[in-house]
Image 1: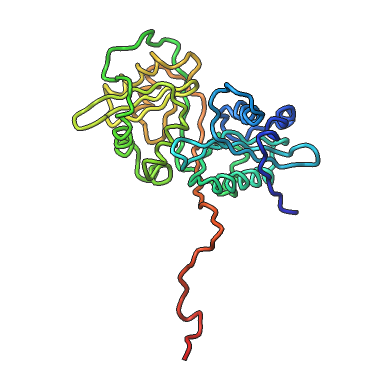
Image 2: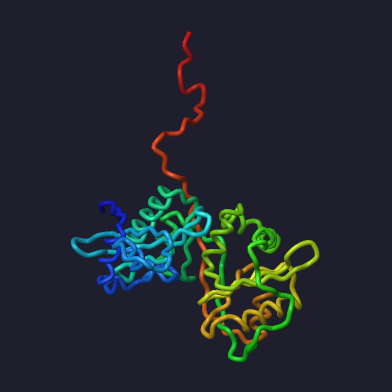
Length: 307
């Protein structure tokens, strides 16, 4: 079988691809609003002014004649170090060769643009998992999704959480280092630049923090679709964080609970949060493509020594 290679698509190509998307009806990864990114990136290239700010995107396609066998979209996250695989669509229910080719193409494009890590989410038990692993992605965190309960807080509660400010960024990173296990941090965000990318991938529209002795002890991030928590303590702080989520999250939003947050999960279940599903968070580390080859050390016995 000949090796397939995905090609980078220009923004104009991305816009013309839109009418064909109905043929690519198998979504491999957890959807992150990629259709809007695909159309917006194409519209931006036409010179139309007064458009909303469009994230920097990379789009690759695997062609099959005049049509496409698959297409993948990644967006650049804050700080530039991390990119998020927003969508990977294929035309068959299962096509491992296409999945691998598309992700390899995205990795190549992201590396050329200076990206250091590519993030991806997929549902637990996905039939595409072997292909994702073949493409170099490894799962480092399991996430459980819960719907918000029918009975929820109707107004912003008076509690330990306050709106976050820019001055809280360093404190949120220190809280992340306290609240998240080392093996997860090593794979996800070993430094502040990667952490900025992770927070950006959550698509938070509102952020709240709780102050404690010597620093922040809680963070709540709420977006259009999901809410995320970072807590250094349990008990009353967990209950206050969930109350903040219920007061501010949209009606059809969901709570994301990582596997290293059993206290949050137990509290959510006790408050009647219905389980929605489980997904895996993956990453692939990238090396930036350079035109100059690196000089590497070699064993002395590999070369004859001049006499």
